[in-house]
Length: 93
Ligand code: SF4
Image 1: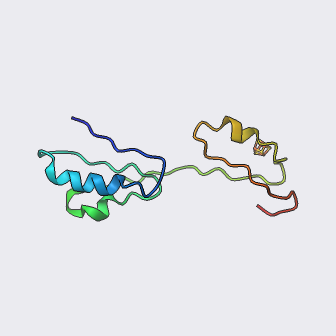
Image 2 (image 1 turned 135 degrees about the horizontal axis):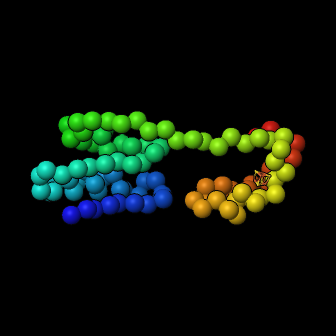
Image 3 (image 1 turned 60 degrees about the horizontal axis):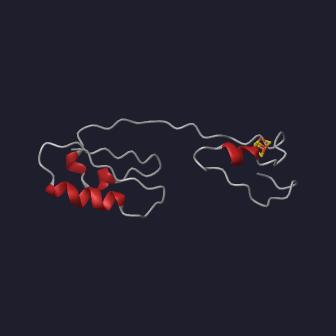
């Protein structure tokens, strides 16, 4: 049996529900917290985690002197992770 809790929104309760549900899961089981920004399941259940593996995430860096704010990257980002804000051209990003 595989159970997955997923949401693009933080604070939805994924970690809390997972930690609570784990008390009722038949042993043995595997818990994996794949939250790249705040993997907090280990804080709820420190005795359940026997190994940790660090992962790295590349973070894009804006090249402000080459960006003309056309917004094309907003349209093509499959994760909807880029927002175009009303930033004046002279603003330092
Ligand atoms: S695609 Fe995005 S990063 Fe590239 S010039 Fe346009 S707004 Fe700037």
